[in-house]
Amino acid sequence: MTIRNLSPQQMFIALAREHRPLYRFEGETRESFIDWKQTALPKVLATLGDFPAPVPSNPQLLAEWVDGGLRRQRWIIDVQPYLSATLLVNIPQELTETEKRPAILCCHGHGPFGKEPVMGNASSPELRQEIDQHHYNYGEMMAQKGFVTYAIDWIGFGERNDNCKPNHSGLGVGRDWCNLYYLHATMLGMTSLSINVAHGKAATDFVCTLPFVDANRLGVMGLSGGGTMTLWMTLCDERFKATEIICYSDLWAAFGIRDINYCGMQVAPGLYKLVDLPDLQGLVAPRPLLIDIGANDTCFKVDTAMLCYQHLAAIYNAADAADFLELDLHPGEHGWGGNRSEIFFKRHLMAEF
Image (cartoon, rainbow, N blue to C red; front, side):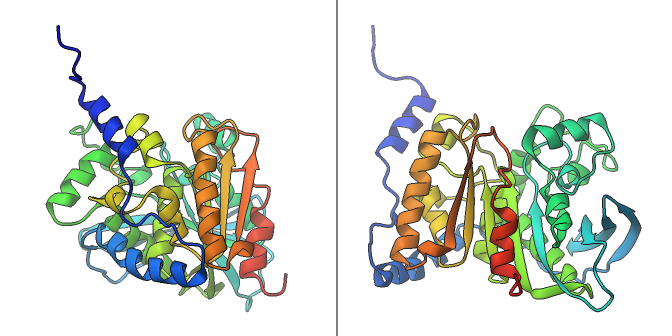
């Protein structure tokens, strides 16, 4: 009787347990940080592959209404050849005619509704449950705090899920569109990440043309898969001056390979060969970064989440940027803490605060 391993999953777990990324940060000085970032960042960004070509946004305002102290807009814009996206914008109602405000891109995570609950759409019991479960309406609440907020659906979610209205495709029923789109994208030399980043940039380009947006004061925030997109938007677009990553801190050997808690929306070929997640977050330094961790999160367990944060803190210390890293360790489950967000973004985006 053999006692050798026949489980490929156990093989991957063992490989990950012994793996040490090529660009794991080990330095202690600002000079070592600068050298590390200059070397690692271009190689990390190269894993994304090609980006879809930009196109004119051709914006169309579909609807505008007032609710919850906010002026709300629904636009449709073109984001690449052959594809558009619906864009939601929340505007503080007290905004004067000539005033410009900082804007925050609010990235949604996994779930059937995409951007809608994030931006405060509570029009059904299912949407209200999604908001309550994850404290998910940060796109609404941050607008009520004085920021312009905006959001689109990433591919595979909300109105850009091929199973849902208005697309009505039954081909992917029972399968994860995140993984299917990743397969399609890599066949063409792209990744789901590069596609979504391009669409986030297209949305940001358009929002920056709106008369009430200060294009020099942009932030980005998001939960879970939205934390993934928040991280990559920051790394790929220097316009974002402040970042909040919500419940997306962990180690890939743990949440990814051991727990299989990731998908094609979150990965790029060879990425873990280069860096682990705390190193990827550390490439944001020295820009301001707020990390939310749920003490009772069942997606990203607090033990490895805190190990991730400790390594991230060491990177910010070496970068002489410790004052620009903050932690909201909240007692909740997988969701937005919301305890430090207003002060954090006002500190870094509102000079008058």
